[in-house]
Length: 311
Image (cartoon, rainbow, N blue to C red; front, side, top):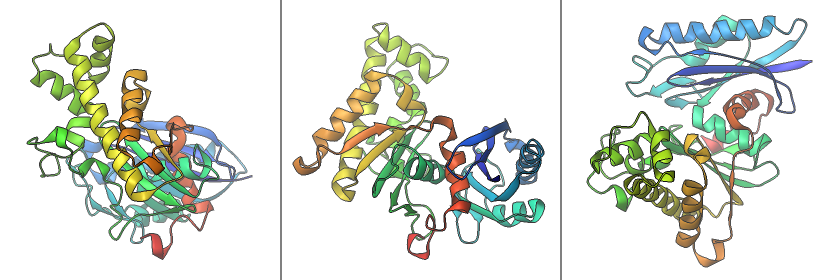
C-alpha cells in the first residue's frame, strides 16, 4: 500500500504518522521538540521520526511528506516566514526544501493550525461540507477557512490568526504579537490562568486546575472561564456573520474542558450571529490528536488543497 507521512510540528512535541489514502493513521510516533537546540535539531528529529515510521512498514511505498509546523509558513517557498521565541532561530528555515533533500520524497508545508483545519475539513467533522470554518482554542487561538477542500491561506500564508482580532473583554491587555486588546490574551488557556491570578486567585498548577476549581465552587475561577468563553463565542459569532460557513468546528485543548466552557462559547456565538445565521452548526473535532497529521498528509494526496487562488 502507498502511505503518506504526516508531521505535526509544535513548540513542545513533534508527532508523525503513516497515513493511508482514506485519511486513517496506521502508525504513529512522537518526540519532544528540541526547540532550544535550534532548527537543525528540529529538522533531524523530523527525519528520524520519518525514517523510523518508514522502517516500521516494510514494503510500503511513501508518496511524500506533509508537514504542519508552528509559525507562519509560506506554502509556496515552504519557508518559515515568522516564528515566536518558543522556537528560537526558526524564522527563515527552509523547512520544505531541507526535509525534501533529506528524505528524497516530495514535501509540502503549511502552518500547524492550517493542517489541523484541513484534516477536519477533508476527513473529519467537516467531510462533505463546502465551507468549513475551524477554530483551535488552546495555548493560542487560531484557525482556518477551507472552501471546497481548498485552504484559504491568504497572501502571506498567515490567514487564520483569529486570536489577534480585537475583543472588548481584552481591552488594555498587551498581546504577545505586540498589539493590545486581542482575543488571545483573554480567551486562550494561558490567558485564563493569568486572569485568575490577576483576580487574586491562588497560584494554580495549570489552566486545567482552574476548571476544577470552578466546578468545586470557586466563583473567581468560574468568572474568568465565563469571560474567556464569552469573548471567544462572540468572536465566532462575528466570523459566522462575516463568512457564512456551512459549519464551525471547534478544537484545541480548551474544547475538551467540559460543558461549562463549551456551552458558553456556543450560546454566545449564536447570540452574536445574525438571525438568519444563528442556526449555523458548531461542532467539536472528530479526529482528535490526529487531525494535523491527517491534514498535513492530505497536502500530498490531494492537489486541490493548495492552489494559487488559496495563497
